[in-house]
Amino acid sequence: MAEENSNQQQAPAPAAGPGTPRPGGGGPGGRPGGPGGPKRGRRNYVRRKKVCRFCVDKVDFIDYKKADVLGQFIQERGKILPRRMTGTCARHQRWLTVAIKRAQNIALLPFGAEI
Amino acid sequence: MEERIYDLIFICRPDTPEADIDKIVAALEHAVADKQAKIEKTEKWGRKRMAYRVHKLREGYYVYMTIRTNHGELVKELERRLKVSDPVIKYLTVRLDEELKRQAKLKQHRERRAARRPRKAPATTGGEQAVAQS
Image (cartoon, rainbow over all chains, first blue to last red; front, side):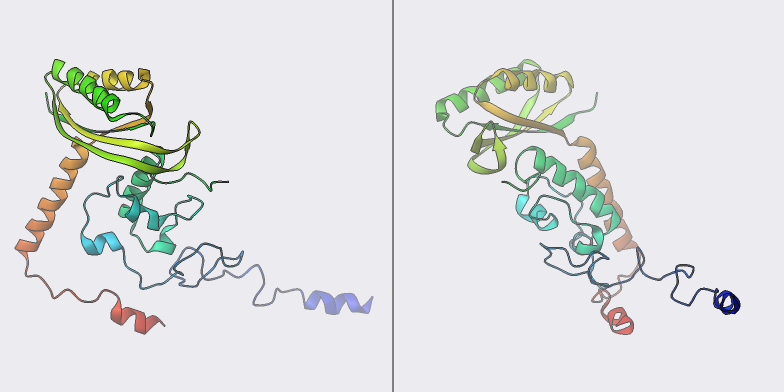
């Protein structure tokens, strides 16, 4: 019974508990891998200083016919790589998605892994 | 009416003879000419390996055309013909005029901006920032 008091005094959550906000996540974390561990099929890890390739080349139109360029932005399974993996800026990522989906429709890029 | 630009890609079965492919292209050209439209470009990319199986085939014969027209209904007609023809297994039409307009506008903006203010020396982006963060 005397133990209850001491337990209650220890009630306030420790510093690393769920109550404190944790850094990282969508912000500029710059750390490789997610909470689930490293994903397979990755060529580049998350790099903070990675710039958007299209911005550097000042590309105005991402051509859906260029499968070799677009192929660098998808996994082997056909899934589109997220921005934090490729370093693309938001605008070019939107254009890229459109181009990739068009290329997938015309069988220049795969939709999924071939069995 | 403004002029529209379309990209048309279609894939034929890989074993179709060249003559048949030319026939399809000719039929499309006919349909295009009927509506006073223009075909800007016809490219035959030839046999290519497809990223997935279409009608149980792994390869296809790709043909690419660029078409300029004022009539929007032309696309429907072309697609109808492609759908009906047997050797064609896949097709895709993309409308590009708005895209090209936006492209031209962006380019114009960029050039105007570059001409207006003195260009700073293009630094290696994020070079110093990376050192500061790591």
